[in-house]
Length: 639
Image (tube, rainbow, N blue to C red; front, side, top):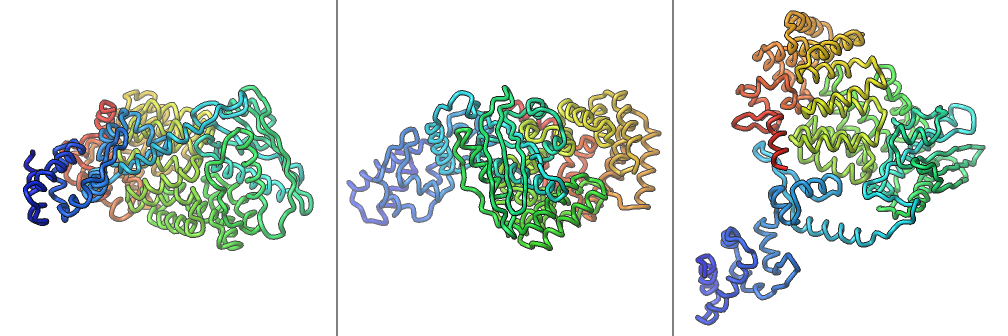
C-alpha cells in the first residue's frame, strides 16, 4: 500500500478507535479509491483536505460506475472541494473529451463549449469545469439525436447556419412617416428572426441590406451579392388604424419560393406594432424551414409610437460625419424623452460613442458615456444583445477587465449570434489576449453577416492588421476601396500593411492617396503617413510630418498615441515612450490595449519603461518579450 493510503488509515484508526481488521478493511478501500482517481498527485489533494478522515468513513462505500468516467460519490465531492474538477489547459480539456486541441477550440468558438479565461499575475490561462463540460456534451448529444431528416428543398440542409437576407420592406404608401414605419419594421424583422433560431440561422445586418431600399435588382442578384442562402422580401401598407404586411421567403440558389404569408393587424393607439408583427413573421419563417425556435420570444417592453419613430429616424443617420452623428444623437435623445424606459435607445447611444472612440475626441468622456448608456439599457432590458456588446467594449477598452469583457461578449452572442458589434468586440478581445488565429477565423465568420458594409469592413481589416496577418488585411482593405475608392483610412492602413511587407513602392502610393483624400488632415492620417515614409527610408518626409503633428497639438485636441507612433517610427524611442505614458495616464487612451500588436512599437518591447507600461495596462509581459508574430507562430505550431 502506498504511504498516503497508510497515513489516511492511521488517522481513521486514531479518530474512530478501530481494531486491526477494520484498519485492513479501510486500507483496502482507500487503495481502491486512489486507483479509481488514477493519478498519484490526487493523493496529496486528499491529504490536504480538512476533515477528510470522517468524510471517507461516511462515503467510501458509495461507488457508482459511470461509463468511461468512473466516479464515486466521495470522489465527486472531494473534486469539488479540492478544485480537481477543473481542467486547466486546452490539452487537459481535449484529453477529457478525447478530441484534439483544434477540435475543442472550434467547439468553443462555434458551439459554446464552456471554457473560461482567468488572468492572474498578468498571465492568462484557460480552464473548464468537468461538470459544465459533461452537461454541455450531454446536451449536444441529445440535440444531435433529436434532429430529424428534413424535406428536400425546404429545410436548412447544411450543418453550418444558413444565411438570411431580410430586404427592406417596400412601402406601398407615400410619405416620410410611412417610410420610417417600413424601415422600423424591417429592423424589427432582422432582430426577431436573428434571435429565433440562432444555432441554425444567421441574419445579415441592416447596414448591409438597407442599400437595396430603392434597388431594381432581382432577389437572385441580391442573394449572390450578399452570399445569402435565403432572401426574405415583402411589402407593407398602413391605412388608417390597420397595417397589412405581405412577405415571402425565397431560396437564393434556385429562386424556389419556400414560404409566403400575409398579416393584417389593427394598429394600437399608443404602442408600436413592429415587434408584434415581426414576431409573427419570424415564427412562420422558422416553421417553414422545419426548425424549432430555440428559445422563447423576448418579451421586451414596447416603446411609445413617438419614441420608436424617433429611434428609427435617428438610425437612418448612420454615417460617421459630424453632422450625421449630431442628428443621430438628437433623435435618440428625443426617443428617450418620449419614453425613458426605451432600452434600445440607450444601447444605440452607447454604440454612437463607441464608433467615435478612436477618432479625434477625448476618450475619457466617450468611455464614460459607453458605460453609462449600456448599463442603463441592461437595467431596463437584460436580454438586449447590443447592450451586452457595448458593456463588453467598456470592459475591454475602458476598465481593461478581460474576464468581464469575455463574459459580456459570450452573453451578447448567446442572446443574438447575428449581432455584428458583438462579433467585432470579440475579435478585438481575441487580438488583445493573443488569440490571433481565432481572431482571423472570427473575422471570416462575422464578415458573412455584414457584406458590402464599409464601416464593419474597416473594423475587420484593422483588426486583421493588428493580428499581423497583412495579406488577409490587404484583401479586406481592397474590398472596402471597391465600395469607396477614395476612403483615406483604407489607403493609409494599406500603406502600413505594404510597408510591413517591404513593398515600399505600393506603400508610398497608397500613402499619397490617403493624404490627398484626407482633407481634414486628421492626426491618425498624418501619423500613419509619417510611419510609412519612415519605414520606406524617406526620413526627411517623415520628419516633416512629425513636425506637422506637433503643430496640430498646439491647435486642437490630439491623441498622444499618434504622436508616439510617429516618434517610434523615426527611432525616437524615449520620446515615443514619453507620449505613450501621457496617453496612458493623462488621456486613458483605449487604443493602448493593442500596443503589443502595433508593429511600429516592436523596438520598444525590451525597454523597462515599455514593460512597465504593459503591466499598467494589464497586458502580459514575458522574460524574453515575445512579439505577437512569435506568439502567433508558437500558437500555430501548438495547434
